[in-house]
Length: 145
Image 1 (cartoon, rainbow, N blue to C red):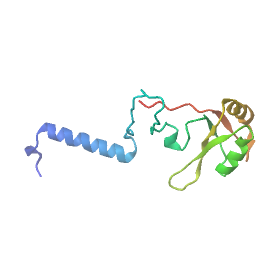
Image 2 (cartoon, rainbow, N blue to C red):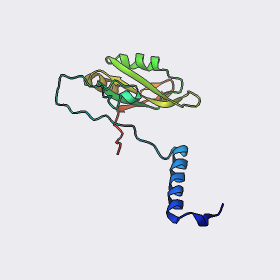
Image 3 (cartoon, rainbow, N blue to C red):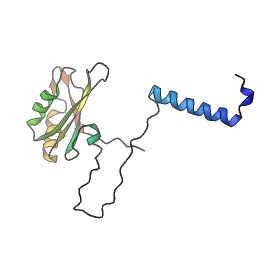
Image 4 (cartoon, rainbow, N blue to C red):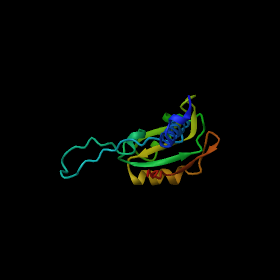
């Protein structure tokens, strides 16, 4: 097929589209999820809008803690038991590799109260569990522009 029959703009558009497809497949281009925007004129109406924590398994009601340098053998049940000493635990997520379902060595713990979260950070940051010194701090939300 000869390229003489195509206009320069058609070739540029096809190249741009091919670049987007390749970027998407390679994981460099991500499509942002649709956001639901509802007016809050009535405070008594229930909203079906999910918070950012819901997207990843959190309830969005408590204080989320980042737990890093976890042993690869640490289970969610063990993590919940460990952090349960400091207050009510709303949710636990150990981040896993999607290909082999093995822990990536970090996770998130959602505590019900700020005081429980503060106690957990103070007691657990730097504590050695299963031969690894854990890093625990309040999770920072990722900015999404």
